[in-house]
Image (tube, rainbow, N blue to C red):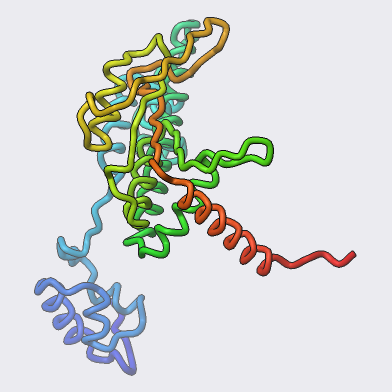
Length: 291
């Protein structure tokens, strides 16, 4: 080995110190900073033959996939089959199994081709769902704790989008909120609590299709809002129309919950005023196009 010159003239002594630090568990960066070695080639030579400490090795999330890919390849699987089964790229599979013998190719049956296509689609759906969950969880963490004013504004917008509204042709100043989303109901009730609406002023009723599990729907909503099933008002049954292609017919279908605020005329007028206040503020922030 040719010794370094100049700054690294005492190469053997420097290597001895580098090896000693490596065996003590230091990383390459720590050794470089400790010995003031700013040349990567020299550092490589100083540490030649010395394995890195275990703590510097990053866990490889693909190790399990690699082993599984090799196992499947040895069983005669093709790249396409392995890709469908494991949901990883062909380029990764190629790197993992290129030293293994190639399987003997044969014509796939229609059933095999269909099964491969199905597994491929299922793998894509699984990856999409995982990405969807990660995005939703990250977005959830961004909300943190709502201030009273934030909840107040959310509630005004929520009611004006989903709540009953008075019309010029039908004056009806009542606070009524109907929704099938339990989360919407939760936010609406929290908003009413913020406004000081007493719980005793609230009346609840279920709206559900007659072909559904009516008793189950009533119990679900009663539990959700924290009352007994007997405290619900009479359930409204929607007539079943066999010509309607409804999608909400699974076990998770509970219909809608209607929330009425007794004596809510004054509150309705305030909601209307709050909403138009928000609209006016939004208009003041929106650039107008010159005519």
